[in-house]
Image 1 (cartoon, rainbow, N blue to C red):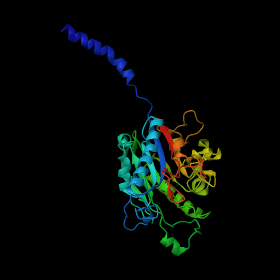
Image 2: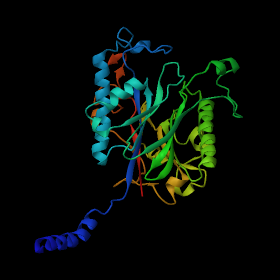
Image 3: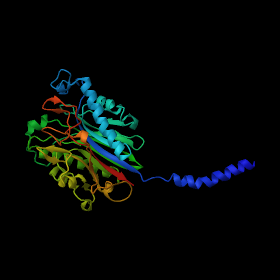
Length: 356
């Protein structure tokens, strides 16, 4: 009996100490985006122009090359995990062919422990590249997903294509996923805006941004207080009209009003940082924008990076960068001049951190 009472007394003494030891750390989440540059399998998908990524196609895309590509992308994701001390809660992807390649990717040994779940909806792009979202099911509860199609129902003058060309136009859908993170309602938009063709297509990307922004306003009406994060390969820089005007992106947090978005990569580009390069000049097409509720107010908010003046990260390592030759200092891509060079992507991934 005495031993039993002594044990109870000991447990009682330990409880406050254990309670302090288990004090919850601030909740933080890594939200990222990665254009993985043509993640195709080696099989033909009916209706897709994927012939160059077949074993007998122009790229001689074999099972061995495909495995190298998967391993490389997984390595980058795993290194971000190690550097951040946690897996992404949400990771948007662009240029994936189908669900099959996503299932192969999340099974890669380097990232299999993350147990990433997949959101993917087959889209109308003629080459067959789609957007997708990977999420950590222990940190996010997905409520619903949908594809947001491109259309020309706009007041913006579309001069790039005539009416017939507009009818024939196909591009990537925007993937919309909304769910709960730490009990807060978030909607994520994973985008791959229409490509640049020389200096053309600004009006197409303005329309894409207009579609996304209009949808966020509809969602706000339906779910008051919902927070938004828009990410993707925008094929435009932060200061371009699609992002600054039609998506209401702002360079500085202090300028973000209700209905606006903060684009943390604007200042970074001004300072010469790039997620991809054209003729040696830096660009940041791979943006992650957050709505006003993620800038100020209660709950999860965007955080400045540790030991950095920036609220975003363009993630690069030496192995992700060409170390010699004509393209020295640029992202180490999969192919160069038609030759498979075992690279990673022609884009660097980007991410932000949100925390309570």
